[in-house]
Image (cartoon, rainbow over all chains, first blue to last red):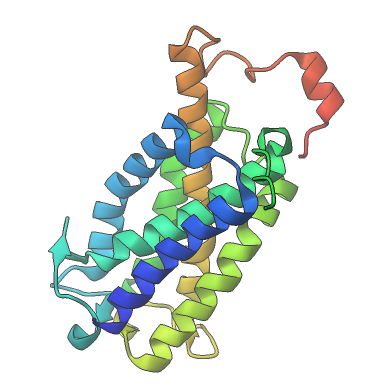
Length: 110
Length: 127
């Protein structure tokens, strides 16, 4: 698997693990989180697209390190996993800091 | 002016999301301590990932469209990106929350700050 693809996938799993095993804010089960994520991805298309567009590229990628799947406006599909991890990690900590009372109970130790 | 392209994009992101704070009452910029706390892990992890990507040649930047200011091998624009984009994400999250409250019969997001003055006073202005 290309390197950026692999790291991007691992970052998503890592962030999900941080939520499910450690922070347990519960935001992954809220419409508020998923609606926000959809909006962020929607805006990522023009912003990321502007940075990665074929003509006047601002940020370029080694074709050997990505799948080559481009979505939206020429963005490597990996960037959307990168965006998910970056925003979700931030929101997990934000939620924990601003609403500590909503933390879910720890699973009973066996 | 082309050297400012990347930073212009970032400034645009901040400008576009400002009404979420000022009109929809997201109260993100007004909780600076919580915001900084939420940003620190993201900035640390993603700067490290960015440096790794630069070292590995995964990605590279067109000198024409960046200012040329660097932190080590990393253009300053990348640090700005790891601050600006997560801030936009938190603003979106809070604004969506305000809108969902409204849909469920709560106060409109543009009406006041969305919580009783008493609770606001008790909690202070910074979380």
